[in-house]
Length: 356
Ligand SMILES: [Zn+2]
Image (tube, rainbow, N blue to C red):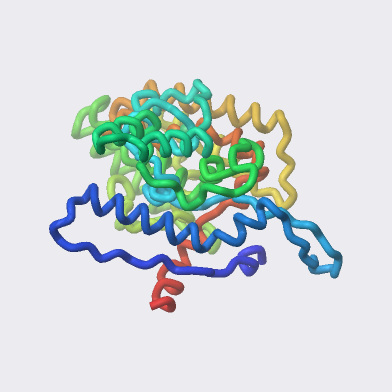
């Protein structure tokens, strides 16, 4: 029912560039356009975030309401466009904190959070610079584009608790986990088995894993992929909800083949279930947060000693790093199951077509 409360308010224009424009220039123009469009779209609501407004609630009572920028749901690299922060390989690729690029797989350090005021000061300094080279140098200190984010300007925007342009890009399960970190695990099973057991044995193991998947009974509300017995390595057409189901059976698919892999898969699903509580009335307590952190630490230790070295990125990815922010976001937003992109992703096709 809560989805019925949302409605489309605007469609962003699609830029068409002359061919001779460099890709860096196209990106600058695109970011400026996005920033301008958001500025127009959000102008009134930003003003109300400073003044507040009287509204009548569904029960007929007058309420004084102060809107704020609370949560923005999206995927990489869209979030980078919205925040005007540069992703990898820039030096500080997280739009939420100031983690170093080469420390993305280190989940144990809490890096300083980004704020609108530091970015705004840096931008003013960059825009006043004498040369483009100097401007770029100033911006690279924060890995930011020389463009103000269109999301800047809400009241209390530097409050880590109340939100703002850099606090609003919170963790979203579908993009970050189902189609993110979980697929890194799935994709690394094959090279890992090859290295430890040799080509012939690993091929037999892969056949066994896929055959087990084929044999798992399918309940009507528990869809699993078929993929012609080739889920690993080819899951290109598998949907997010099916991947969530695979997450739950993966420890059993790997059972008896490699104990370390079973442990990685089991720890992943355990911490996922803790972070995305599906109870009707979620009861998140301090002990839940401690449990999430502990399970994440155990998962992190296991994946670093097994799969990480077999990933092309060696585990240094922005989505992996964001696992370290989960408890921060739960403290600010409550139960993360309410932050979901799946419904809106499903509407992309229909709403886009209707607009044009
Ligand atoms: Zn971060």
